[in-house]
Structures are given as structure tokens and as C-alpha cells.
Length: 123
Image 1 (cartoon, rainbow, N blue to C red):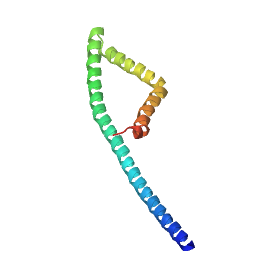
Image 2: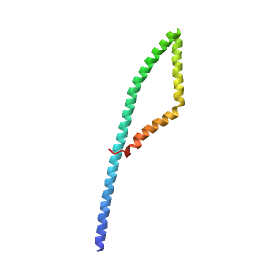
Image 3: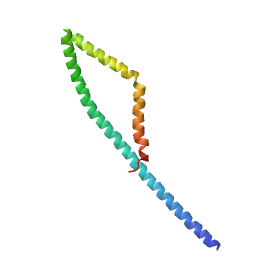
Image 4: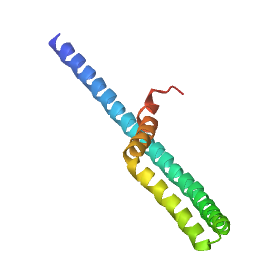
């Protein structure tokens, strides 16, 4: 009778250990997949930002030069047109610098919601 109890306890302990090992293995696989997903998302976001950002900066440069030339012709002084456009960029840069904390908070909130709230979504 006592041997049956010990055998039963041994069987239950063995099954519990197997279930625990299976859980750890599945958790490890899940975390590897989750890291891959987040890494792929981050890299694709950086690639898109780089591609779009490069084209936008090129467009901004050409637009700024064209605007400066046109403004210089209107003011009848090309140098004054370039200085005016530089002043506009300086003011925009100051505004962005003063709003840098709110911009950072917005970006962190958007990226954080993508990484941490995604687990709640059922596929």
C-alpha cells in the first residue's frame, strides 16, 4: 500500500517535471520569436524612415534653394533671399528644439504601444 503511494507520487512528480520542461521550452521559443518580430519591425521602420527621410530632405533642399532664389529676385538681392530662407530654417529648428520633449514622449508612446500592447491582440 505504501509502495503504491510512493509510486503514484513518483509518477505525478515525473509528469509535473515533464510539463514544466515543456512549458520552459515553449516559453523560450515564444521569446525568441517575439525578439525576432520586434527586431524585424524595428529594422523595417528604420529602413522606411531612411528611405522616406532621404527623399524628403532632397526635396526640402531643392525647394529651399528655389525659394531662396525666387525670394532673392523679389527682393532684388539674391543674398538677402538666401539669408531669409536660412532664418526661416533657424526659426523652425528653434521651435523643434523647444518641443523636443513632447516629440520624444510621443515617439516613445507610439513605439511602446506597438511593442507592449501587441500581446493583447488575438490573431
